[in-house]
Length: 88
Image (cartoon, rainbow, N blue to C red):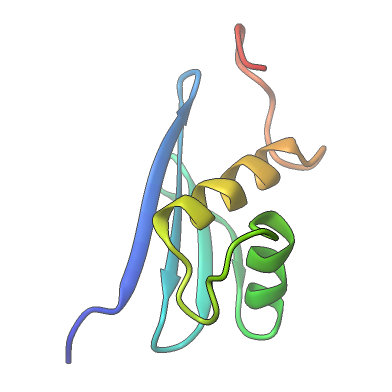
C-alpha cells in the first residue's frame, strides 16, 4: 500500500514541531520534538485544517502549506508549549 501522508516540520526556537495528515484515514497528528501532542480524526481533523487554512481549497488532501498554517495555529494556543526567547 502506498504512503498517503503529507507532513511538514517547523522550528520554533529550539522546539521542532511536525504535522502529519494521513489521506487514507484522515488522521492529523501534531508532534513536538517527536512526541505526539495532538491527534484527531475526521471530522475533527478536517475542522482543524479548515479553520487554520480557511482560504485554501484543500478538500480532503491538505497541502504542506495548509499544514504549516495548522502548526502556526496550534502554536498560538495557550495550551501549546512555552515560547522560546525570540519567538513571536
